[in-house]
Image (cartoon, rainbow, N blue to C red; front, side, top):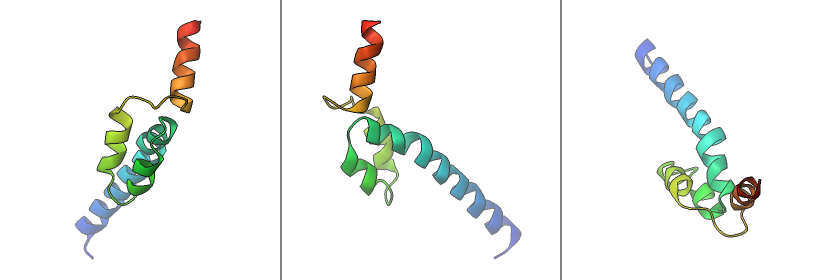
Length: 70
């Protein structure tokens, strides 16, 4: 591998890890566990799960409800 391939690989790996900690965790918090697990192989599913409204009873929905009551 030449230098440019190393730089591209490290950049893409860094973006993937950042998505794991942000978008993937939001997908799981909203209650979309299947999208979270399948998103490991197809990361676009994490984005879909993060944009969808939260499921009833999910951590995200409960936190939103508590914030609205304040």
